[in-house]
Length: 67
Image (cartoon, rainbow, N blue to C red; front, side, top):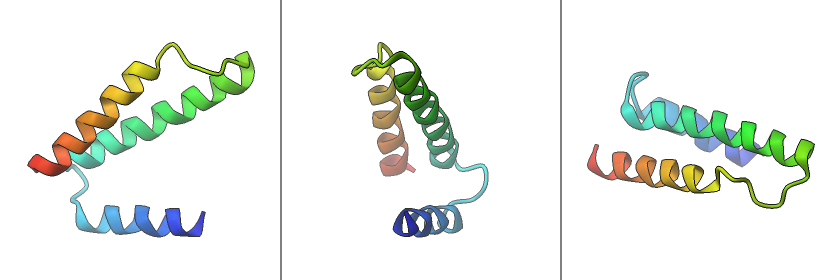
């Protein structure tokens, strides 16, 4: 978990506060937490929103590469 925190801090330092990739990362993080909560409550192995999660992840990679 410490390594994850370090990478998050490094990401925050490199990018400005309103950078598109940072905004996408925040959205993806919130969505991931919401999906994990549903996974625990509903006991579903695959979320019906998994395709949306994958698409957002792809969008984040695209923004990072093109930014």
